[in-house]
Amino acid sequence: MKATKNMVPEGRIGRLSDSAALRVLTSGVLRGFEQIPSRRLQEVSTPPPGASERWDSTAIRDLCNEAMRRFREGSPAASDAWLAPRLHYSLRITRAEASESALWNFLALCVAPDFVQWRWGRPKDGERREVGQAARFCGPWFNQCFSRLWWAAEIFRNGKDYEPAEIACRNQDVLNTYLRQELVTYRPAAQAVVRMLEREVVRTGRQLNALTQGAYAASATKIYEVLAPDELQDFGALQDWIDSRDTAGAAPHDRLPLGPDDGGVGEQSVETLVEWFEELLSVVKVRGKRDEAEEPPATRGVSLDKPGVSP
Image 1 (cartoon, rainbow, N blue to C red):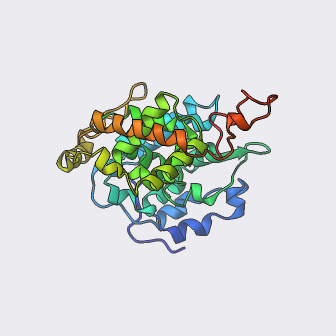
Image 2 (image 1 turned 135 degrees about the vertical axis):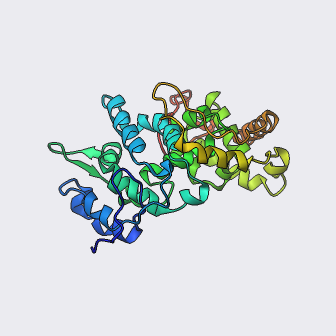
Image 3 (image 1 turned 30 degrees about the vertical axis):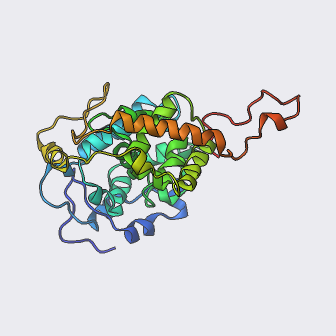
C-alpha cells in the first residue's frame, strides 16, 4: 500500500475504501493470529472534510472503551443498547454520509478494531478472539459493527428521544431480523414495533419475520402509510443539531443523551399500527410454531419458541 500525502491526522475520522479494508482482513487477522495494521491503513485513508468536531474520533474511542469496561463481565451483545444512542449522538452525520461504507471501515479498522474483536469475537486460546465474519469490519450496513448501531439509533429514535432505540437494541432479534426489512424505513412502523416489544406482544425473530411478511402481503389492500401517516421531519432542526457538534458536550454515560429535535411520530399513528400489527400477527403463520390444537397432549403448553433466540 502506498501512503497518501494527506494522511489522516491523529484523533480524526477519515475514509477507508472497501478494497483497502478487505485486503487486510485475512484469515489470520479474523482468527486473531495477526494484528490489524491500523497505522498503515490510516496512511492510505482519505482525510475528513474540514475541521469540524464531527470528525473527532476521540469521542468514539472513549465510548468504545467505556462499553468494554461496563460490560466486561457479561455478554458483549448487551453493550449494543448502551452504545447505539451515544454513538449516534456523538457521530453527527446525515443519512447520506452514513451510507458511505468508507467511514465505517475507518472506525472499525483504524479507530477501534479491538472493540470489534471484543464485541464479535469468540474467545480462543490465550487472549486471541476469532471474528467469524469480515463483514463486522467491512460489510453491509446492517452487519457492520458500528453502522448497524448508528442506523438502529437513527431508525428507532422518536425525534430527540433515544429511549425507543435503546429498547429496540436490547433485543438482538430486532437488530438481526427487523433491521433488514424494508418496513423499517417507515417511522411509525418502527415505533409500533418498539411498542409491541414493550408490551411483549412480539418477543422473537420468528414473530418479527411473520409480522413483516404479513404486512407486505396485506399492503395490497391496506397501505400502512395511509392508515398511519407520518409527519414531515424538520430537516432544518436536524442540520442545526449536526452543526452544533462543535459546542456540544460528550455523550453522558449514565443517562440517555438528547437527539435532534426534528419531530417525533404521532401517537395516533403508532397505536393504529400497533392494533393492525397485532391483528396481522394473530392470523399469520409463525415459522416453527405449531397450533395448540395440533400439539400432542404431552407437549401442549410447552413453548419451543424461546424468547431472545434468533431464527
